[in-house]
Length: 157
Length: 157
Figure 1 (cartoon, each protein chain N blue to C red):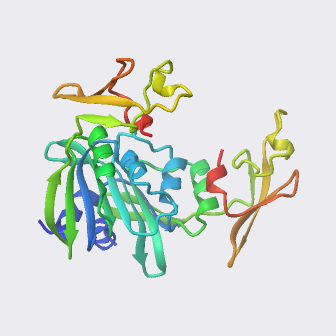
Figure 2: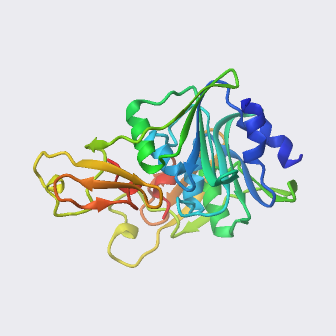
Figure 3: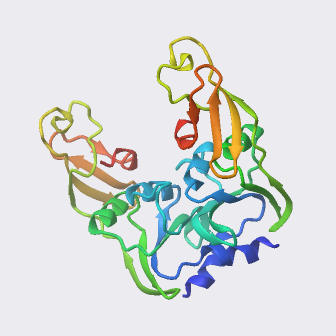
């Protein structure tokens, strides 16, 4: 059987969410944000490093799931150009961009080990969120002024 | 745009490997076995819990990669009915079943914390591998006689 014919059968979703234009390589982190592990029972598909019109991207499709604001905010931090498509009866009925939050509390671990938010005190991390076209998203710790840009996905709480 | 039309574009691979009939839910563990993380640069796609003729299954497709014997043995342990399809120019040119090894050394951590293979001694774990139709794959430790069946993926070394 040809590869082209096989695809159609396994990939389309009837109802659920397609997260498109994910930054290339971040699809596995998106699954982690959504809590999708081996125990997840609905249909999930993804493609990493797909060739799109604007360069490489990742795409994640989840049958029967709509995303919470908390999940959307986390996806925006690691992939601010992602789009969220709601699918009903195989058609895209709604398409939205994720919105980068300007401030996040208790969402990312500060990578400065001496930051008070990493101490035994019951203090949640707090960051202001900035975005530049060249350098992408950066998080600025409101306690220690430490800046995180590359390692956001690895430090999500 | 309809979901059905979108699929075709992102999913087909030209050359590489399709791992089909993976036990439902195990696709993320297969990616882990293959060392595929955010840093991987080739195209990878997967579907989890897809409806197949023989019930739910997972499928993983990797552009431009052929699997090593070591990788195939590990996939067989967590999904003994998986098939390995080699794709060239969008066609399946070779289709094989994985073969369950009868013995594995240094591949899985014994879940008995008192097992000598978990001590500070330089001793590799050794298991004989058994398979039954009802209970699937089980590993029998040659040191402490402990049996592992459910948690193989989590204990791969």
